Image (cartoon, rainbow, N blue to C red; front, side, top):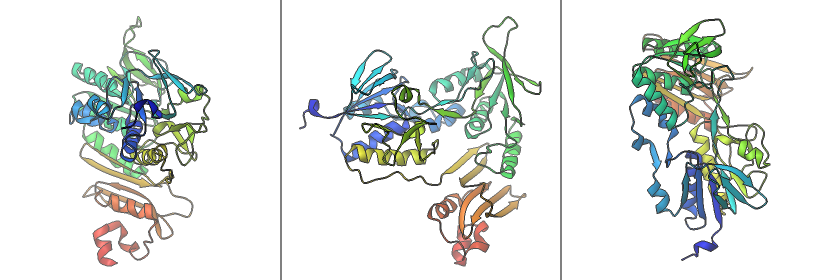
Length: 414
C-alpha cells in the first residue's frame, strides 16, 4: 500500500461540476496517485446546477440533484472543505489559503472557480429580493418569494432566464420577462423561432417585454427600506416586483487567478492540455479561455475534464479540441433545439420549413454540401442527427432535397 504522506498533493479550488468531474475522471485513471483536497464556497457536496430549474419548478428535490454526497468524498479519501473558499494562492510556496485561514500545500493545483452572475450596474441591484440564478441559495430565495406570492421580474430572456420565469410562474407568481434584445434566446435562436417561443410563453401566462432596458431597481419604501419594490425601465415604465431575478449572463470567476499572477484575459488562459501558464496549475470549466473561447455548456466542460484528468494522471496523450455545441430547451410544453452556427456567413444557404398548423419550424444553415447550423422548434426528434451531421462535416449532397423532412426519409432516399 502506498504511503499517503509520500503521495503528490492535488488541491482543487471549486467544488462544482467541472472540478469534480475532473476528479472523477482522474480516479478512473489513477485512483491512488494523489492526496486530494477540495475547497468549495458552498456548504454542500457537489450538485448538478443544470437541474436548478427543475428544482425551482418543483419537478426535482434537493436530494435528486446531488451528484456527490459527503460520503462519496470520504469513500475516496478526499479531504473536503465545504463552505470555505480559497482566497489566495501563493505560487512561489505552492500553498493556498482559505477564508477560514486554513492552508493547504499542493504539487498540482486545479482551478474550477466557475462563473459569477453578471449583476446589472444599475441603482438598486443590491436590494434585498434581487437575486441571480446560480446556486441553491438563489433557489431558496426564489422559493421563499414564491411562497409569499406577488410579482416577479426576470431580467434576461436567455435560456436561464426563461427557465426561471417558467418555474416561478408554475409556483404561482405573476412573471414579467424583460429582455434587451429584439427576440428571445437571441444567442441560440433566429428571430422566427424566438417569435414562436415568445407566443408560447405568453400562452402560458408570462408577460414578455422585448427591446426593454432596465434603468433602475426601485426600493419598495419611500424611506428606503432596502427591499425591492419595482423595476423601472428606460422608457419610464415601472413594473411592480416582489422579486427580481437577474439572468443577464455570467462572467468567468477569475479574481483569484488574476491576483495570483496567472495569465488572464476574459478568463484563465489554458492550452490544449488545460494547463495554465504555470505548469503546476490547471483550470477547467466556465473560468477558462481556450483559443479565445469561453464555455457555458456541459458538453465542452466534460471533454475538458477528460483531457485535464489524463494529464494529471500522467497519461498526457489527449488534447482538448473545441466542437460544435447544441442547446435544448423544454419549458411550457415547448421543444427547442439549436446547434452549431445558426447565423451563417455570406456564402451560407438556408433551408426552412414552416408548418403553422403543427407548430413546427425548422431552419438548417448550409455551407456548400455541409450542415453547419440547425434551429428546430416544435419537432426536435431529429436534432441529435442534425448535430451529428454538423460535427462530422458530413456531405449531404445525396439527401439535400429531403434534409428538412428528417432522418428516416433521408435514409430511405439515400
